[in-house]
Every structure is written in structure tokens, then in C-alpha cells.
Image (cartoon, rainbow, N blue to C red; front, side, top):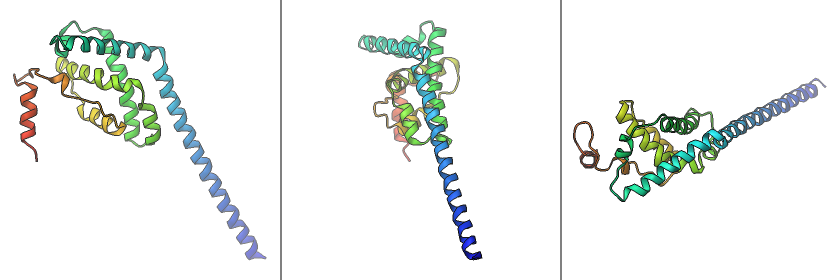
Length: 189
């Protein structure tokens, strides 16, 4: 009889542990979905909509003027408005913060990709990255190219071209980006 009670107690403990595990997993799933919903709400917000509209306008301006030989550097040398800076920072940190949560293990890949796969990701690479690059040149702040590369890789984004906005631009040493690219290609390990 004691053996039966001992087995019954052990079985109850096992069922209790399984129930606790399932409850913890459901709580984690709920937390992830809540986080995803907060990202989606932020992306759908009026503020983000305004910023994405501004990025589309900049992208269209570049597209229309690139054929005339107008470079992104010329765009950046115009009076740089606080509105453009706010747009760049807002969209950049939206994507960077999601990526940071993924890199530290707080987001599963499935939730990460769901939060990142939207129309703004194209604008992030086609407009925010070049703005960030030229802003770093203008202000001396570091350009976080490695993070852009990691986001490109982790999202599976295929259209990133980090060279177009650097084409034939002079760096601070007077070297063109073309010669920098060729010299770095020659230094392969």
C-alpha cells in the first residue's frame, strides 16, 4: 500500500511538473505575441506612417535625380533638416531595437522575422542606411555598417546594396570609394 501511495505521489508530482512546464511555455508565447503586437502597433502608428512617407519621398527624389548625376552626397550637403534627422533616427532605432532583442535571445526567429518583414525594411536599407552613412560622415559619429549587414543576413533581405550611395564619393583622405573597394578586395585573406 505504501508503494502504491509513493507511486501515486510521484505520478502527481510528474503531472504537476508537466503542467508547470506547459504553463511557462504558454506564458512565454503570450509574452512574445505581446511584444510582436507592440512592434506592429508602433509600425502602424501615425508617427511611423509620417516617417515612412518622408523616407518614400526621399527615395523618389534620389531615384528621379540619380539619372541627372545628382548623388546622395549632394542631397546630404543640402541644409540637413531636423525632420530628416528625426525620421532617420526613429526608423533606424525601430529596426535596431528589434534586432538587438533577437540577438540577445529575447525574440525567437519566427517572431523576429514577422516584426521585421514589412515595407519599411526596404526603406530602412535604401534610405535610412545611406542617410546614416552620410550623417556619420557629417557628424563624425560611428557608422554601424556591421549591424546593417547582420540585419540583412538575419532577415534574408536580398536587395541591399551598400555601395551605391558611396559611388565615386571622396572620403576624408581624398580616396574615392571605388579605389577603397578595389584595394580592400586585393587584401583578401
